[in-house]
Amino acid sequence: MEILNKFYSKVEGFVTRKALRYINGQEVLALQIDITSNCNLRCTHCYLGEPCASQTMSFEQAVFVIDEYSKLLNKLKMVPCIVIGGGEPLIYQDLVQRLIVYIKEKFVNVEISIITNGTINLKDIQFYTDHEISFQVSLDGATAKSHDSVRGEGNFVKACEFIVTLTQSNISVTSLTVLTSDTSKEIEKQFRLGRKLGLDSVNFTRLISSGNGKRLKSSKLSPVELRTAYMDIVSLSKKVEVLTSTNSPLFCLIDEGLGCSGMFGHQGVVISSDGSLKVSSRADYVVGNIFVTSLLDLFLNDKVYKDLRGHRKSECRDCRYFRKCGGDRNAAFAETGSFMSKDPDCWIDQL
Image (cartoon, rainbow, N blue to C red; front, side, top):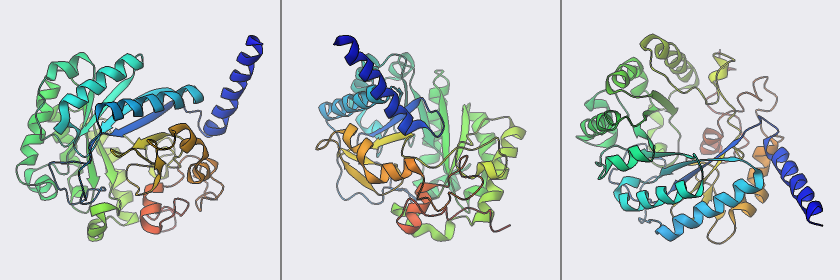
């Protein structure tokens, strides 16, 4: 009977994995755990918008999230990768450090990164070195004038000093810039700044019309302007010899060797500080609350997740680049309220 149970367990795991991963043979299922909605900045494009009330997980709640994530990984036979975000997680460094210790005890060789605005100094930098934690720092401009216009006066210098402190301690740091009509003019400067600061990579993401970003439609790039920016990112990364990520939809329209599918629903999960499971960190859609319903149940059975994994309802499905690109589902949802709509920033029909 024990042998038979093991056999059925293996079959069940195989079928579940096939059902979720037939698209690209993915092995890693990432978790972004936003431990707080509290932030020390009020950025003009923040996808969270103006916080109605600050909420921060207790250590016990954060542990519960990790345990639920572990159950999901075990079910799908997938590998962990964890991002700690917010809000600004470094407001609560004691919680962050306790959580990191727990995660490292739970998973062997797990990659952990922290998303931060880089304005709060680390209390114990050796801790992050010892635990091999990487950081993503937001840099919305190559100068104080451009960055601080988005993130507040004095924050460019703080972010740069924060980065240098980390890189001098051999901690891996990347940057992320939101592409707007202003930052798209500074792409080469961003790469050169990244090289000067010792960044491992200089990365860019689209402005999504959610949260505070709804107010910035005049700063949003048109599809053709976005294409130009993506071409600049690819060419200038090579020119300045600084790495950049092209694992985003639409990059394959520039070079079919670049890009990745935007049809999420299988790549990872995002848990907000109140326990809400979100399809994406930048889409204002809540699947349910894992403090009420198990993560396993929500992830496997929610209709939106199923639609995204199945792809059959996507308006991009007839495009020849669909398997490689899929269109950005965040952008589609922000513009239309549907994850299945066409990517509003796609330029393929505008050239």
